Length: 157
Image 1: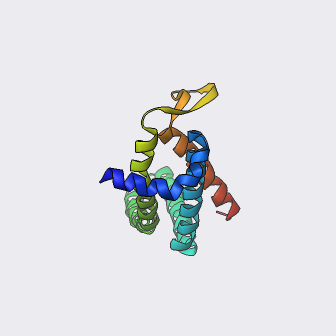
Image 2: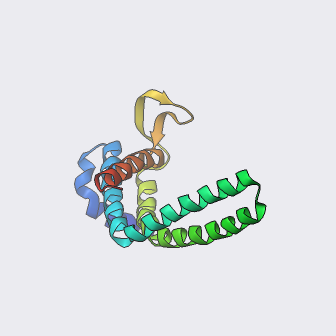
Image 3: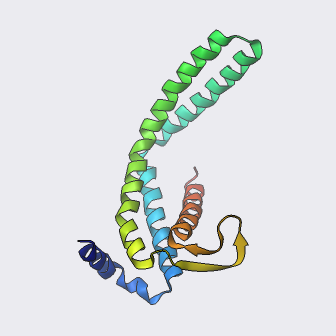
């Protein structure tokens, strides 16, 4: 079953095989992250998200003020309100998170089958904890986080 899946993805991605593994992963990570970021932009209601963020900041300020005054009853009241608003925020984010996770999970078996545990990038310097040789997972996430950050900045988030 995995062989059939890998063959299907190989056929779709065969033009990329002219590149070295680190470039294949870079291109796929960039394309997937760009696609996911654009999709999330349209799936998530930005106006509601911004209102919820503002509300969270206001509640946190109220909590800080109540703590300074020593009014624990107000602190508990604001914490309850904070939990309710945070639940709304997480509920809205869940939809885009599930979409992103689903798209990523579709490609994980293929990445693992193609690149396994071997190093795909050898850096000219050493990163703390990671070292200078990176496998496909680390390389994918480094490219992915950078791409997501750039796309969000370009879209004004």
